[in-house]
Image 1 (cartoon, rainbow, N blue to C red):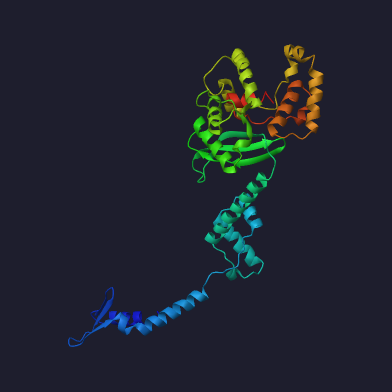
Image 2 (image 1 turned 135 degrees about the horizontal axis):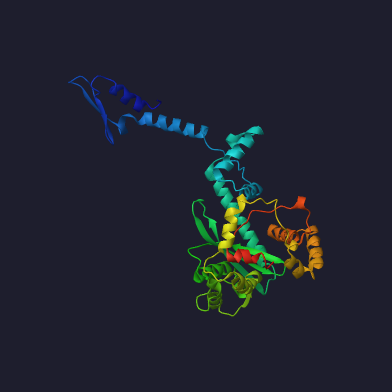
Length: 359
């Protein structure tokens, strides 16, 4: 204890009967003697002690003041963002790295709040650079794309509806944002798309829309496409996703062969996925071993097989494309038995299953 005022008070408190007591502005120190009572105001007596205490506190602040040297650079900020490192873990990593390199960490601004402010600043600067570069491009007649998906929220506890919005022209693409929606209605999607176009100031350059064929997008009255046209004040070209267009056609074929259903997935596929772990995948029969199938594919078997084998030599943009090619070759009996590998069945709802046949 360095404050003389506190020392005196503590001394009287340790005396028999603890004669001293404190108030807001006055400290009364009562001595054990009945004839002597001394009342001392803090403003009058302890002025010198307060000055000494303030000087000592200021000295401590100078001694233990935080560093001023910035360690978070723009490149480092991009790196920790890409690796999904939080602010606290970033402090730990940078601090340990600086110590291993024999750097004076006391001179560096290594605190969570300091790093967080720097990271926010760099993100804002990077966003401004992207927007400035985008405005300098000649992008008249661009198409806006959007699609929604359920993703974990920031706390990783619940899922949130997010809408990915981007624009394209030829080979150029630019992501505008992935805002969170309250719901997946057409009104919410149209509002999010319109807000992103307004933020980037490109609403007058949009000439078309690319979307999937859900009712929330294509509804005649409350669909996102209709509402977006009203908000922009002009008619736009409808470019429905080719996968979803073919799904509408294929669904009729599926219902004709398998029967109609209101469930999101066929029961036969659900049972197949449940029983998959108990199936011996090494024992299978190629499709062409069936006489009826062999007669059906006889005319185009060679041509299709050559096409599929050539595609195996090319780099496929998606793994499910490659999986479909291999499954077709297995069905036609063109893959050696030792090279056969069957993946675990994935999503089996109607849209996902039919999309595999519209590639």
